[in-house]
Length: 198
Image 1 (tube, rainbow, N blue to C red):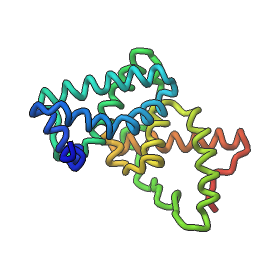
Image 2 (cartoon, rainbow, N blue to C red):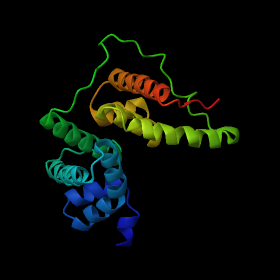
Image 3 (tube, rainbow, N blue to C red):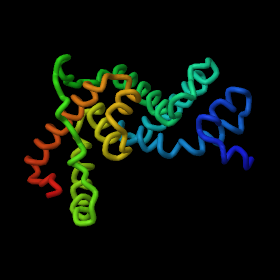
Image 4 (cartoon, helix red, strand yellow):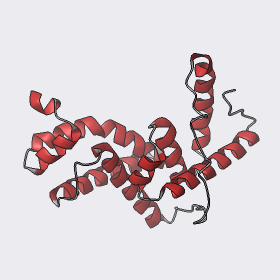
C-alpha cells in the first residue's frame, strides 16, 4: 500500500489500467475533493454535482479501459476536462447553455491577468476582500464564464490549460474571461463594489 502513496496520479492511472484496482482507489481518494469542489462551484447544486461527479468517474473508468488516457499530460487536467464535458452535456440537455461567444477574429491578445493578481504583502488584505466580492459576483455569471474565472483565479491555470481542459481554443477561453469580467464589472457597479487592488 505504501508504494501506491508514492506513485504519481499518472502512474496510478496506468497501474489501474493494468488491473490494480487499489491504484484506482488511491487515485479517487486523491482527486475526489478537488474535482467535486470544481463541479459544485460550476453547477451550484449539491444533488446535481453528485450526479455529475459519479458520471464523470464512470467516464474516466471507461476511457481508461479503452486506452484513451495518455500519461503525457497531467491526470488532473484530463479529469477536469471530462468533468467539464459532462457538465456541458447536462446543460445542453437542459437547454440552459446560453452563452455569448466572441467572434472568430476577436483579438484578445492584449488581455492579461498578470497585473490583476499582484502578490505582495501590502495588497494581501485588500486582495482577500476583493476576492470575497468576486466570489459573490461569480454566482451571477453563466456557467462557462463562472468556470473560466474559477479555473483561472482559484485553480491558477493558464489560459492554455483552461482551453485544453474545456476543449475550446485559447481565444474562446480568453473571450469567456472577457465577458465574465464585463459582466462582473456591471454587477459590481450595480452593487457599488470596488473591484480593485490599488
